[in-house]
Length: 507
Image 1 (cartoon, helix red, strand yellow):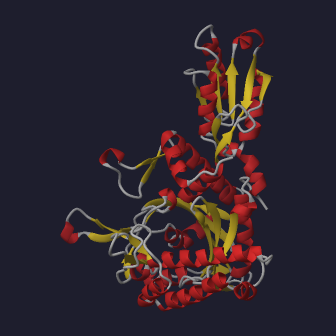
Image 2 (image 1 turned 90 degrees about the horizontal axis):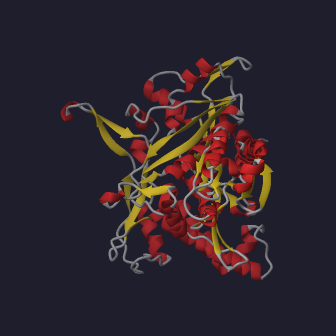
Image 3 (image 1 turned 90 degrees about the vertical axis):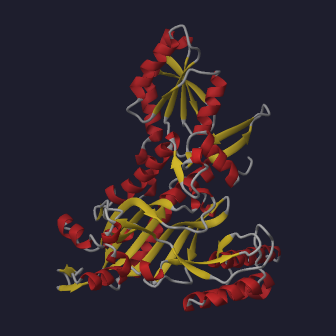
């Protein structure tokens, strides 16, 4: 089975109606994408899987949908106005711009990966301590030294040191190959806009750079109206916007993206216990999709955000390497405390068991919907060599996520077969998205459905008119079975039911 690289995923997404470059007829708008007919179905199915497992399967988590526009003081309180920026550096020869922190992190990762290969040859396990690995591998030791220097510079906000490390470790531009760099500068990532019809009297606003603050400012509204007792969570799916100067790698990093976030409010002092619980819960949710455990790993944040006392990422092995898919953070009481200070309104919870008021601590789980989409495409798209020498492109999506659940295909466009096929089509529409197609040979139609990820194809032929049986073909095995029309719905429904995934995901 051939490996699928990122460019093949990009091409497949466009060819089969999953994702298009935005405003393509005007030569695109960089790092912005539109979801096509197949893409929006898959995207909505991922949302449904997350929402049902997060909200509907937990009696202490409720949902909201907060506005994109928020009072500008929100972003002052959250720290985004003063500190939401990226350290950027330009290569003077290629004029290409990079995030300085990413250049250093990628160099650290390369040193460590090279070191681990050396260690594997020496029979030293990856699970050994860093001290053991550093003594046995020069490259692994370099990675640890650079990592320590990078963390020190990051904590001090020392942009000059960033550049010194980039030069010291001879990091080159991937385009020009040169090491001729500018100074490192900070760029704020928020999109600014105006509220009001007259520019001179308009209010400065921002497109929200994250969805979490909409949850925090509604903490008391939700808690009181939902009559929730701590511990409880508030979940949200929504758009966020960041003026990414270095947006790249398809939908992995975009300027307009969608987040699926849950803020879980707990008693102070219990946050790290809940942090560990949510790590287990979220990992199981990912594994329920059939992902190999070797393709997922936790990455501990050595450099913590100013509001956190613990943070880990669930990383997935994308075609571009292990990258962040979901963040799990212990945010302490920072957000509610800051909003309380800036608004002058108390954002506290009265705990009847303790008979006291306090500002709750928060454990956050945050996953990028677009990254989740890319992850699903990355592990599902396959090129298979068949016994007859042909190559089959198949998207073996979990059936519950598939854009089309079942395709109804009359063998020929005559002899009453289309009419019979449409009868079956109408019967199955309540099972999920059903597709009817009569153009091209049956083999070509099978291949098209494979590429779209359709779990089942139903072929209506002349025998169907005689005994009401059809051929049902399963996507992954390509096995075909003759079944009665009355059996189709139960066979398909059993496989595509979202409850199948939910049961696997629940702890």
